[in-house]
Image (cartoon, rainbow, N blue to C red; front, top):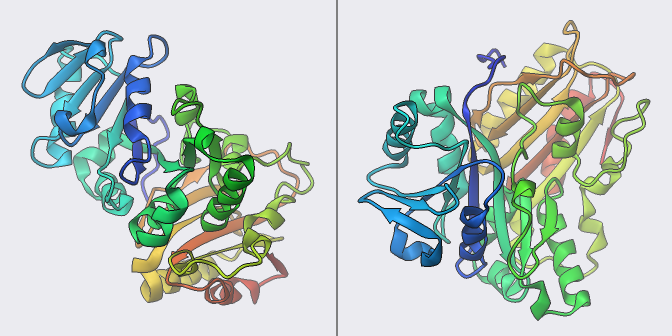
Length: 362
């Protein structure tokens, strides 16, 4: 965990917009670039023609960048993603373009993990950009069937920080409610936002990650425990019983859903640093390729304040200390979402931590 910390983080925030084919990404994308207030957005798509941009929003066009009447811009990927972002950043530094944050729209079949890795292992991107969140659009009408047929769609749901439920006007309340429970089972750490005819308040898409040096403990908590009520300071993790709602579903899980397992652990006292490192190293070494998300707020013995950590597979963000922590306990919480790892396996992996102190596994 001895990574560089960005104390004064000036990196540009990046939102990864994903979702299966036909889920409604294009509708949401057009809403983002049509906004007339708020931050200026640079949207990166694979090809302009595939993006389905609303041409009424377009003001000027050049070979690589489409400028919108709102002041936002849209850029088509030329070559690899890193070169595209470097070109955009260079234009910004030269005052040829103006934008405050970046949205990357993936293809419908894209796995978010390789893109997340790129931002951590590419030296230029790691210095100049940070992932602000993964937003996955899910179609309430065809989404259940898509999850049954396409495991890529299941992975997109499991890796999201925010799920946008689209086309809810096409299904009954009971159907959308049942689908929401299914999504919560696949990803118990993501908030679910219902879109109104494909559109959501764009501000709800930003500042999702708890891995922000300028962020607060409250924001980190919301990232780890979504939609939680106001926390009671004596027990900030008292909502964690809702983190593993698989028991809510009485019917057998669909085959693709059954490939996703999640578990969380609450530790009441600070963790010995060597025990935490040993647990994390063992988990990565044995099941690294199958770890979709691992994140938590951790208190270590000998360190005054807790820190937030997050990883995908074997790649981890630099840990972020919570300087404003006001909790009166030293409880830690860790959440793991895995692919082809049963929940019982994940719970068993926590035994390495549990042997050092009393813990509550949920």
